[in-house]
Image (cartoon, rainbow, N blue to C red):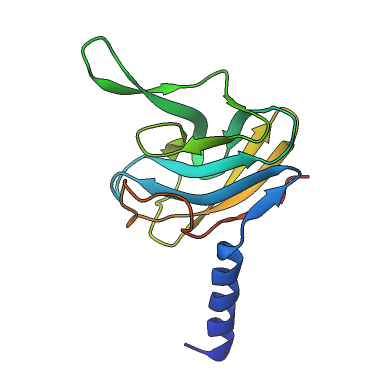
Length: 163
C-alpha cells in the first residue's frame, strides 16, 4: 500500500470515529447490511440523538442505493409471528432523547437495491426531520456485525446538513 493510500485510509478511519452532528441532532454508529449477498433489500441501523430542548420528528429517509427507502419496525402478529411494517407516520424524536434503530426494531429499509452492498462499501442516507431538515449520513456496510453488538463506542459515520 502506498503512503498516499495509507494516509487516505487513516483519514477515513479518523472521520468515521468522530460523532456526527447537525444542529442538535447527532447520528452515532450507523451501519448497513443485507441478509445475503444476492438480496434485493437491505437495512441501515444507527442511534439518532436529539441534544436540543425541542422535540423533533424523523419523517422519512432516502438513498440512491435503492428504488424505495422506508422507515420500518418489527411487530408481532396475533399468531406470534414477527413481521416488518412500514412506519408511515415516521418516528418521534423527543427533546434530549433518542431513536434506536437496531436489528429486530426500528430501522431504515432499502427496497429494490440497485447495486450490491459489500463489506466496507459506503451508503449515503438522507434523514428528513420535521424541524432539523435534511441530514445526510455516510453509512458503512458492515456484514460482520453481530446482532447483539451495542451501538456505543463502535465508530461513527460522517454526517452533514443537506443543502
